[in-house]
Image 1: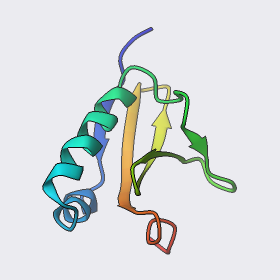
Image 2: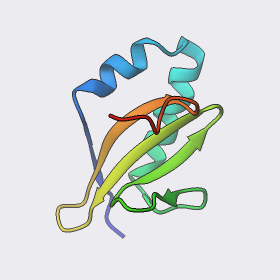
Image 3: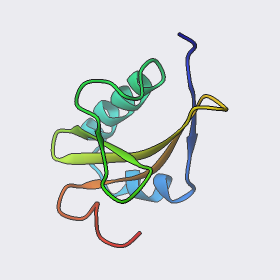
Image 4: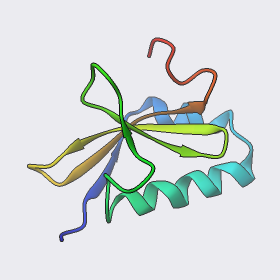
Amino acid sequence: MESYSLAFKKSVAKDLRSIPNKDVKRILKRIDLLRENPRSEGSIKLSGQERYRVRQGVYRIVYEIQDAELIVFIVKIAHRNEVYKSS
């Protein structure tokens, strides 16, 4: 299986600034694991959207998978209370 490449929405950098440093490291490790298997155990497809989410502690990583181009597009990273509010 080929490895996917990662792409980030511009607003993700802003999302990461509001998260403590120790948690950012864990989140980035989790994102890196998505390169090998974006539909891994723990990833859940969001209803009504072509997006998935994966948990990392109290944070959620929302992403889209573009299989034709082998790209995992990270859309949003936020605390579980905030992640599903309008983006």
